[in-house]
Each structure stands twice: as C-alpha cells, then as structure tokens.
Image 1 (cartoon, rainbow, N blue to C red):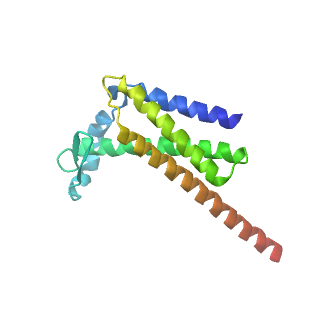
Image 2 (cartoon, rainbow, N blue to C red):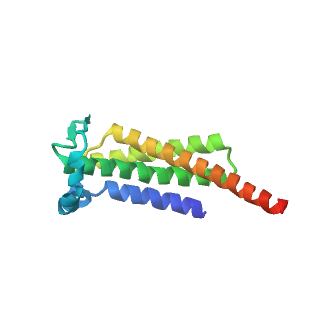
Image 3 (cartoon, rainbow, N blue to C red):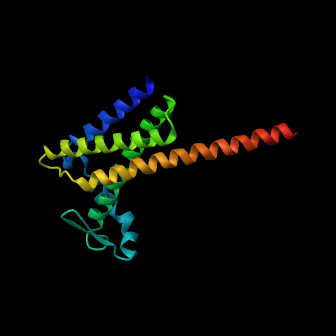
Length: 167
C-alpha cells in the first residue's frame, strides 16, 4: 500500500513538472547569477553536440549548455527514482528479479511517454521521443544501481556477521 502511494505520488510529481512552462523551470537566471563562479568551464575543451533541433556548445553558449546538462540529469534522476520505486514494489510482491526489472522499465517507458505527451500541449515546451530514451536510461541506471547497492550491502553484512561468529 505504501509503495503504491509512493509510486503514484512520484508519477503525479513528474506530471506536475511536465505541466509547467519552460519559464517556470528555467535555471538561466540562477546560472547568470553564478556565472562568475563557473568561468572555469570555459577553460575546458569545447564540447559540442546537437540534441533535437538545438545545437549546444560549452564555449559558445556555456549557460545553455549547463542548463541542458542539468535538465537531462534531472530527467535521469527523476526516472531513476521511479524505476527504483516500481522495482521495489514488485520485489515486495515477491516477483522475480528479472520480472521486477522488466515491469519497472515498462512503467518508466509508459510514464515517460505520457510525460512527453503532456508536454506536447504546452506551447512553451517541446515533446521529444529522445527524452523518453533519456528517461528509460535513467530508470535502468536507477534499478541497476539499487540492485548493486543491495547486493553490496548484503555481502558486507554477511562478512560482518561471519566475523562476529568467529570470535
């Protein structure tokens, strides 16, 4: 029950962010305020790429570049959390690990697709199938990090228990 509530709350949080305009979400004013502290970015080699119709260049437009990295990192983080929540919910229901991973990634993909669909109706936002891919990568990384963390925790805990019993 609690897991379901957390999952639904997180999905509603994601969709509330989708309903916001670009102006409500932009970090450009904050970046301009701190631009003196990030001048070191300009000493890095120029990184350039195109994402969708936009071209990003670290040296030519560092604030746009930084905002793009921040926004896509936010996508990865938000969907990593969603993936972990769904995965844990499935494991709580005693589903196999592979089944739990599959269901988590299907849910992440569906929610990401609906998220982009919602953005399609916001004139100041752009919907992109690429973002669904970024979200899926986030969900996958989140679940894999969770599984690895739990395995490491269990291994360290069993070593500690073994050492105590050997004393």
